[in-house]
Image (cartoon, rainbow, N blue to C red; front, side, top):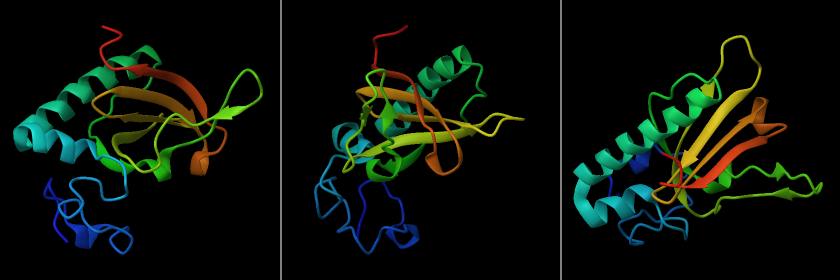
Length: 149
């Protein structure tokens, strides 16, 4: 299998359920991949620039919630990070697409048993907190990119 972004499929735990993004046009699980889409449009330099831009935007948001800064964003399959957040109505809602690949990070806060989670793509940013294994998730923010400066 070949990738568009250069990641090694051999090192991925999902390599037995994926056909590779080059063979699928950047949609290895049926949804778009933020890395593949960006690289197809502008090359690896454009992808590096997007990651840096997202990291900067995310860190501004994290600081507003008293969270430590994220240092890196990794490609993450929506299926594994698409938590169901409780709404005021008592229902729960998921905001991501299980088939898409996002950029994200988990940030621990010293002295606390909950983590901050951030997920983003070219269009949106999601910020949340959760306990061990994704327990008791709380949605802090879900916004279209560019809507807050």
